[in-house]
Image 1 (cartoon, helix red, strand yellow):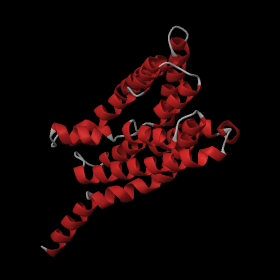
Image 2 (cartoon, one colour):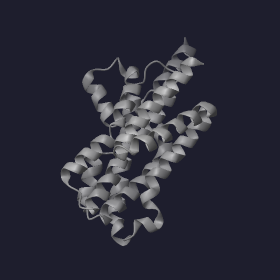
Image 3 (cartoon, helix red, strand yellow):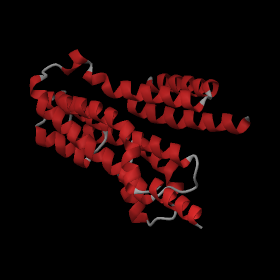
Image 4 (spheres, helix red, strand yellow):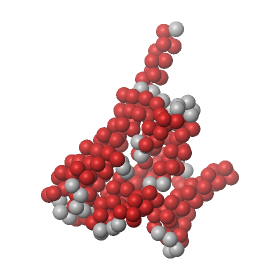
Length: 241
């Protein structure tokens, strides 16, 4: 009986809000660096510290915030900015669809709260944890998401504030920070999965589709089509084996 109680307490601790905070810690360095870069780029594009902060609070999407900063600097129209951000952030539909089966026990409102704070990084952590379970704890996921959310806001605020002394972010490679982070995440995931051959096939397919589709449509649309197509190819290869 005592052993069962100890195991039960351990399982509860693993699904707690605090454990979600702890599991988010390995990703915080990435959030700090990318968030700082987003804040600097946003400030140098002409946005104020308040505007950069509001973007982080309301939009909370690194790629979208880099795009907005670039389009603001290029004096793009509001309609073009909204449309471009919408297309780029469509990937969140794929992320949400992938984790939604693990939260079937929750109400629609609670899943909406979880989905609204889901990012590429928290998705990666959640999927890794979900590999050993059929359901994820709401408290654990909220701990993971809220920690990442607050860290991102603070990082972009710091970048926007200190950006007044960094007039040329490209000189330090800050405009490439987001791309570098995604490349790093991809490499680490490929190493951890130990399915290099299949992953390389999917990557080559994605690159080919992006190049081909990009010749007849915008780069953002090409990325979305390549993502969906390459993911489908990966699933078909897995089932065929």
